[in-house]
Image (cartoon, rainbow, N blue to C red; front, side, top):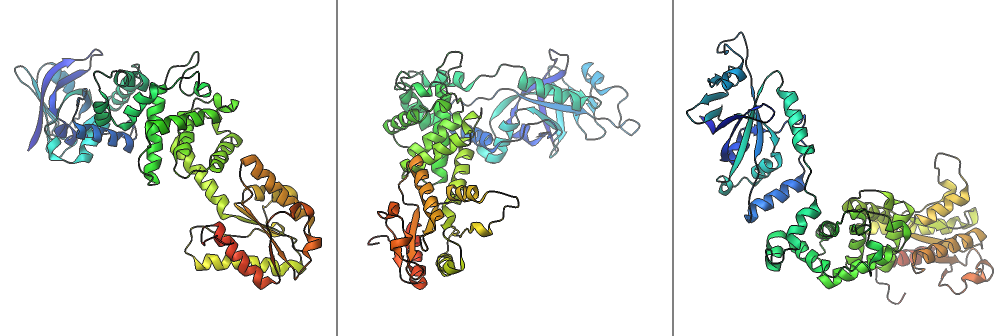
Length: 496
């Protein structure tokens, strides 16, 4: 069995012999393959987008698929042609490869080019994503879809070079239609694409883009001018920025199982809140759509607190994320989540490390071990002793302590013994909380009266803060365990 393609023979503008015709996408896919030497890596997102395009069926149209066929010959072996294969075809004569049985037969008004069934003798120069999406669907109902093809004939001597050159020219020489240009014709045409069509055929984010576009007055959203392309010398991009950002946020909602995006009013209010954050001059210079999308996500995420948004903002500013020209919103969000998660898992113990206070350290460590053992947690509670913390290089203890405090989710401060450094470290954490807009809920003050007197150990500046005072190390262990369980949501904090 063979698969035969019928088409008109002609020379292209550059003198390449071509056979042009129509065939089903299924047939074209079955005899062709992408060459990894030059083809772009297949992106699952693009393939999924084309699959949805197939399945929707509305406005379904594909441009010409460009393939190459190399006329291979083993000279000196049986069946080798007497002349150059391309010359035979150009003179209107038959060609049959004696290596892979590719055949070209001129007819009265057409050329037939055929390959043995099951053989993939054509290379995909343009159209690989379309064909791959069809193959991924693996549904007979799409077998009838017909598309134009162009099969370019190459000699075996220069096939690889010509394929790469044509692939480059096709994908780089023409001025590509930008997202904003393509979206303008759809979003702004409410007569041709009414709201119900826009929502049903293209997606909810397209409809919300239209609705939000009518409300985005940049006299009142001045700090977002740059990211939306509303500054002198920039290309307008508010439609593409909005749609991509809504898709990015929806992707995170799906990942976290948060449901669908809220209505347009809530989206508009979230955009206004992001505009307020962008009041920081450093953010106003950012054109990165992904950064805007990440901020929009934190504004829209159910249950996100003002403290979390402040932490994210401070992290973006501190790490200079805003200086990146291109940012993937999903990656940025995940990186921050990992950092926040790591900080939450880390407990810093501030105390006077001495033989006299060893029982306190052992009690606190035992409380943490009890929780780890008693709960199947993905949160790893661990103590940090700076006097045993080896970074592998020389450092100042004071700076190392401050860094550990900043990168921890909880501090347990043991006031037993009245060590002044403990008071200093508590004050530093309080200052961090003020800067981050967070309440003082991330430290636990403890005192063991078996070691010292609270009257002399606890400074007047902490007298008004809640403290956990116990009589011995056993009580310390149990009370610390209870308080940490409440902090991490492992126990009910009522009555504590």
